[in-house]
Image: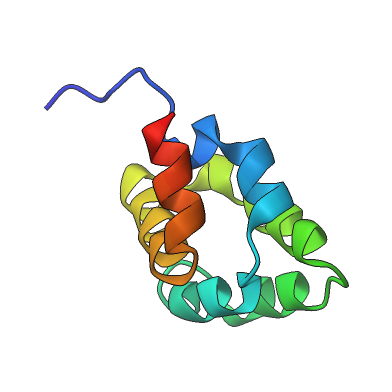
Length: 90
């Protein structure tokens, strides 16, 4: 398969996901041990606000492969279904 040149959903909607994701802890829990190691998990959860946690999480995204990005997308969809549905309709 040819890799898609279009940015991944989580990259396309980065700003809104940072601003509007409400259940960041739940998303991180789903990624912990799969995409995030203990140190990364601790560093992100140490942040004060949800946007700060999401920003810290997004600092890792450029080093991820497509399947890691898919995992983040799935975690976001599980924990914030209405936000993801709204962004997908755009």
